[in-house]
Image (cartoon, rainbow, N blue to C red; front, side, top):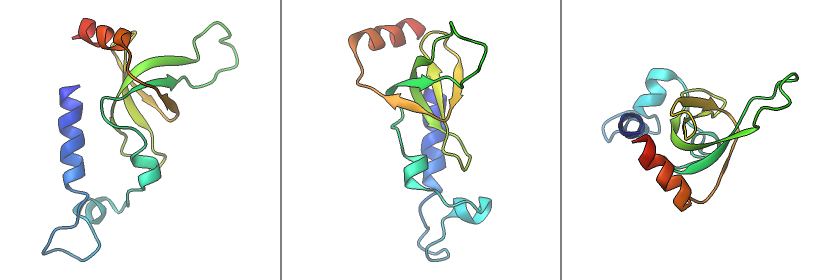
Length: 115
């Protein structure tokens, strides 16, 4: 979680336009050619609890449809996906859809167990 937070912060430092640079163009946009969209890339705060929706499949009827997870960082893609830390497996998940929920004591306890 700490590594993802450091990557997230350093990524956002390059989003703002430098004083002596091209007006209205950030270093990130200059290098990647991609402008960030608030509605896609700022949908959830780092460390927020969410139910990450699993990708639908036709043959898995018994599989859970969401997974409790902690938001880590936005993906560097145009679709606006995010990386999450699964509270059940401890693995990093890439998900496009999710539902942000309040953090409960059970979530805090699970994060401490994973740590």
